[in-house]
Length: 429
Ligand code: CMC
Image 1: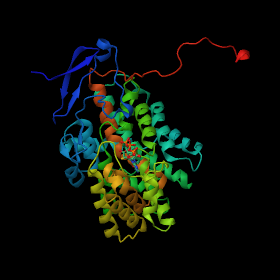
Image 2: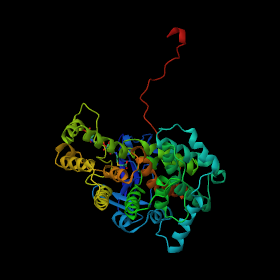
Image 3: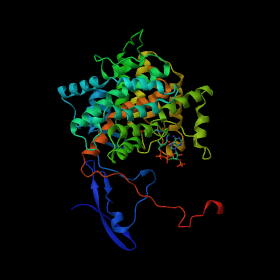
Image 4: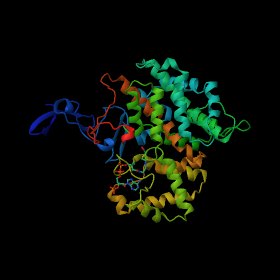
């Protein structure tokens, strides 16, 4: 028999169906709540609200489980490529060889930016935050590809838009970096892999080819895969919400980039590095900063700690920490910031405040150290997160589009303002 939940309001009982996921997660379907009872639910920060059903990513925050389309993140991060992971997330299955090669080729075909778009980089002030430019450039792709803006796109159109976004996000990022340095743009090369091509556009110059190091490619591969999707986080929910109005994929994902920018979400990776630098400058006393974060009268937080969903450990941070050590060992890097990060983690693991609130290092805690080692400037860390998250945003936008039951997102509220009162003309106030 189908499971139901009874809600009693003013002595009258109402039945609501229970939706059960493939991992036995349960949700009360309250779609008819307001119609039948005139009540709504209130859930600050949506901590208990399922906005959709989704077959893309499963995570269990208590057990530290993360799977893309059923495949454990540990196995994907070890064995897959970023492009293959993107295919898996967007198309739902691991690609066969010819499917993967076609998918990769579509990136090669779309890597270049339109010449008018290239010239628009110079209109952006130097020193402006690259996330602002990334969001603007992604939205402006809609101007260059008007044929991809149909409110009900075909499969073919969605594939083309996805390829444009996945490919061009690298070029936009690299050109943003070049613009910040006042250097010439380095065009993409069709003979390089996804990540190698990105590194080439970032770090080669007119005079000198950047030597592609497999160790760096491999570290970046892991990091991008680990960021590729994380179900209904703030930016992905934003992409879905904007897309639910039938806004096109470029516009929806541009909004997702803005949501990611915030320091409580993807912007945390930049803030982590700034925090580690601050601790280093201040002499390396981690306890001082821990005490500040614990002070109820101080809004200061240890960046890179805590997560809305993970309450024991973030499986992504464990893999990234391992990769950080591997990269530093192989490249012979000694960075005092890594030592501070390790000290901070060790001290918080023993600290009652952090233990009680289940605050552990999250994905953003160690990623910045890898970016720094590769030579990516601090203000571009969140842009790197955006490159990684692109497949997830696309997969969710597509899943929403393909669901015939999708509706425009339109939450309710409980109004707490003034009750009706007569308007007072300005000279009588
Ligand atoms: N440092 C110190 N205290 C913290 C921290 C922190 N990083 N995070 C949460 N707390 C405290 C918070 O003050 C509150 O304490 P109290 O119960 O005494 O009021 C308690 O822990 C619960 O915090 P919350 O804000 O209600 O938790 P949340 O689930 O709404 O927020 C979070 C989750 C990630 C926004 C938060 O932990 C945070 O601000 N962390 C720092 C920013 C960060 O690293 N963000 C990256 C998240 S992972 C990447 C991504 O996918 O976005």
